Image (tube, rainbow, N blue to C red; front, side, top):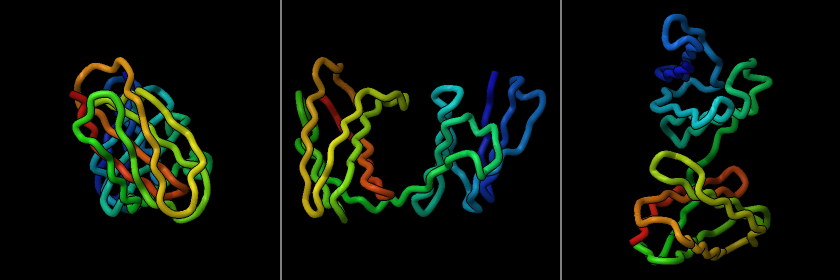
Length: 157
């Protein structure tokens, strides 16, 4: 069983044997990492203050130079309406430059529910999402534009 622990000074500890032995993994940050999650054996996320979000897609098993860890800027301001919603909702945000936009919809367990990719224009953008037959509940939208990220809570009723 794999276990990860994060802490002060960007420390990440990993155990492959349910906690019997531990190894240190490089995170590339000196910020305290307040949470870590690996929804599968390769993809991991760690979060800390000042908008620190780290990601690895190889299980964090190689040195920091090889890990493709990305730090995001949580400054993207996103409005979402209506909230709560019943069938569809609209994400509204201002993009610094024309380029790709990714909207990742997650459930409360952090599992990917949907992924929307579009090309946004510089300035104000609106992207609608139809939730289809998803059950009522709480979801999260992570909107990524370049290195800017915005996170919104979605309530389907």
